Length: 436
Image 1 (cartoon, rainbow, N blue to C red):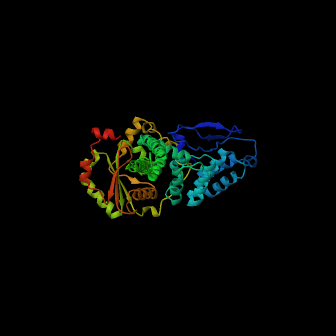
Image 2: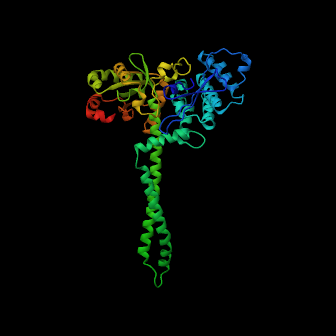
Image 3: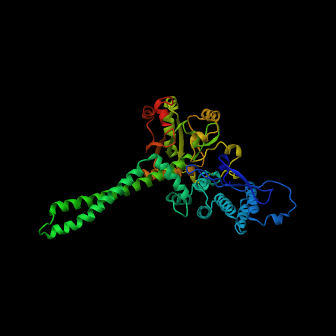
């Protein structure tokens, strides 16, 4: 639980006053990097202090709660985290207690309580939203409506919740649309110029209407005023249109971030996140009823060789499979060996892969079809994507991804495999290299 994915990125050790207790603390990263909440973990050591005395601090209660959680005693762990919050914890201890308390609630299917804990940690204790996106112990929570609500709050940003998450999204947005700031500057500058001109034109228009000696021409003055006012209206509309497009882009980037963390099981039974397959395959997501998806896969078999040359990986998602999600065994997320292989959102992809050798092994494991893990998360993402594109959620759709993990195109029904073979260049082609 408690942010095992953070161990794969960057951490520092800091010891509290008790020299026998080791505590992981957060690391400040660069703006485009993700900052991760770390957690408290305990080490076994002998002590002359009585167990009762050791449990009188928030830190020791969090450590005990983590130990109980790793043994599957979720109810007892939850009680320890709740007690830790009553023992005057420092900000780091309160953050760890709230976060792990949320993980316990998520395990028990208590989405609202989990969201409340995470919201408090985000608002009052500087929890990074990327931590919530990355932690496998919150996989079941991310499939709930409460997570979508929390994510929307974080995307909108603000001083209370999600400011850093929105800032990271805006940095990505600026890279994708580098001239938006320049456009806005000209919108404001030209609007100001038109406003100043209108300020001097209106009195002239009044004099022209009154007439008399020395009065300006009424039609010329009225024309100038109309041009200025029309220009202001047009520039203001453009400014708001640009803002709307930015919000849509931020929402899409947020969905892309969520998509990159969705897990897949390869043919070798290895579970990886979609982000680990970047530059390696072009996933084609097939979402629909079991009969429709099975028929589409059967048709794809006729073009198997050509599709493999183009790096196509079929990802079937059957509607309704998420109604009874399987709860995987919980601990502190994933084993440390697996954690080191998981990339983190916000970093360059080359820095996220372990090595060229590891990447080659992963490529060798990829076959023609993969199985989704946590189907509820996949279904929720697909439905959100359908809403953004004006498609009725729940319809049969296919989504083709680029080599860099972004959506290439999508459509209703199932794909025309012959058309896809013509559309997608082989992996060795120049166009594929430019797509990476």
